[in-house]
Length: 144
Image (cartoon, rainbow, N blue to C red):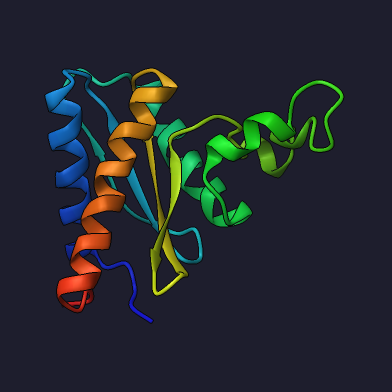
């Protein structure tokens, strides 16, 4: 299984930044490895400072929960089974979209977290990096 390297993270961040630029929303883009360790964090000019923590926590949550953060929204509402989970882990669990696991051969090798726009925009920008990873893993070894 490949690992998330700084070189790969830079490529993924570039793809996400291109999408953020296309929709004209400054974003913070974070990449973590399979252990939830920060590999890279990129703050576009004019992106909100609060988005640095949020992007990193979205990526961490995706690894910790092994799912996109948008999947947590329904399960964490008032009266739902996971209500209050966002108060655990020192408040690191993010329960809205923008964090997506990064997969190779159906194995989680890391995650991306994006913050700065609406939830829909954050997901759109994160998916640009996920799409690039999917393309790269089909054409070359991503650890190169």
